[in-house]
Image (cartoon, rainbow, N blue to C red; front, side):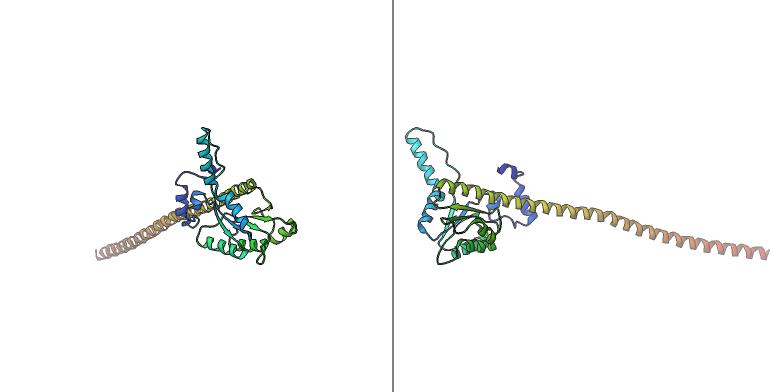
Length: 260
């Protein structure tokens, strides 16, 4: 997937120069490896479940490799990479963490948000506040209840491709697949955004070059016109002097004729 979005190793360096580096968030867009996920749930046991699924895959892979080596078997390739997971037990705290991450230029790619988190914000209000700060973050609503039908959710949050629903109790594979797919979606969207900024910068640069190239012939014409005008003025002055000399010569000849 990544190969189709990169035009050589210096592509992002060129775009960084053209865009002033504003789209490169401390390496996340340059390497396309933002695997930062935020879990917002008031149940600490749920935090631990997500940690085991998303943050411990590296340790599990090491155990699998050790087991395969012990029994002289080929290790099973690990699915994906370990994610960088953060946790909040209330919606307000989660929204603040998203805001701080954006300010620090290390945004979250994905948030899993519980629907009910008494006594604070519910999931919908939490997502509304998060999207006011970071409209790019992907969101999965986690709920064990059916009291928020999709129509109500769509009415509150709008029909958007940044939102999915995950029913509790969830399966570990579902969570891992959602995390892998949605963080990748976030990355590709940012790459596309960066690519468009780069293209626009190149277009603007080319437009300036064309305007400059068109201005140069005008400058050359103006210079030549001024030189020609000066030359014409000099010729006119010489012509006036010649006419004056001819007139003096004619008068001198007439005077000589009368004297004879």
